[in-house]
Amino acid sequence: MRRQDLPRSRRDSSDGIASTRSAAVTAAPGTDSNASIRSIDASIRSSVAEKRSVSFSNSSRLVFTRATVSSKVAMVALMSSMVVAMPSSMVVAWSIVMSALSAALARFRIRVRPRPPEPPEYPEPSSCVAMTDTVTGMTTSARLQPGDPAPSFTLPDQDGNPVSLADYRGRRAVLYFYPAAMTPGCTKQACDFRDNLADFGDAGLAVLGISPDKPEKLKKFVERDGLTFPLLSDPDKQVLTEYGAFGEKMMYGKTVTGVIRSTFVIDAEGNIEVAQYNVRATGHVAKLRRDLKL
Image 1 (cartoon, rainbow, N blue to C red):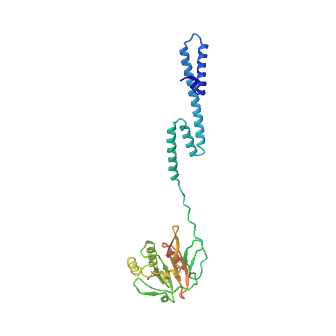
Image 2 (spheres, rainbow, N blue to C red):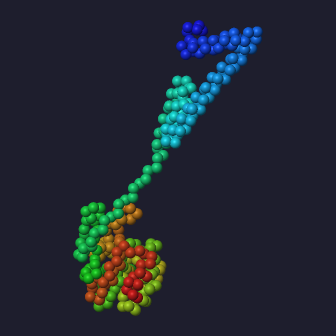
Image 3 (cartoon, helix red, strand yellow):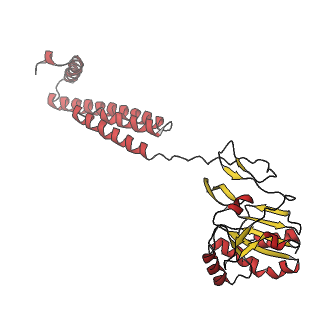
């Protein structure tokens, strides 16, 4: 290739190398010119390599300094310094690979689900009517309070015999509502009442359990666990609703409709003496005994 066909930067470089060689041969007459030229060539190559090394070192230092700011910026800067020496076809392929990698990383971002808001609390009305929460939209039965008259009822027991609240007029009674017979929590609660039934009897308290189960299932429940007090069937959930023990409730952050585990103590005149809603199955009987000082 002719000298005039070279780019200007390369022409300047070659002119500098040629002048350096000529100066070296002129300055050292009587020496082997070829040996001098080889020595100068080695010196020039060493100088160029050193400059490239310094340039690459400075570039690397800049890249890793920026890496402290952001991992993504560091990745882009590092890849950019590598792409400079690549052919155009490899640059296009590298861009495609980096775009796919960035899209894949974006898919694995961790998204934190916000906790559901807690339902607001409102004063409990004294009358037993259905009400709608204006904030959550939940429809629930109003809860009874001490001093309210206990809603009357007549329901079949586990043997199909009718049992009325009026049958217990003149004595106190414990009326507890539970979701389902033969489930673990309801079994624990029923067995606790069974084991403490004598203490309730000594205090003049009868015990009645009410659930939406049919009499046939209640009978199996009584026979399996040896329960010694009546279990009443309310499949239509009418009595449950009148006592505020059925409706929408929050369970594990979701709104569900079902039985609200509740316990009432009804005095000898048929009025609510104690009203407890959303009680726990385990330990509830022991707490009720403490509240009643049994």
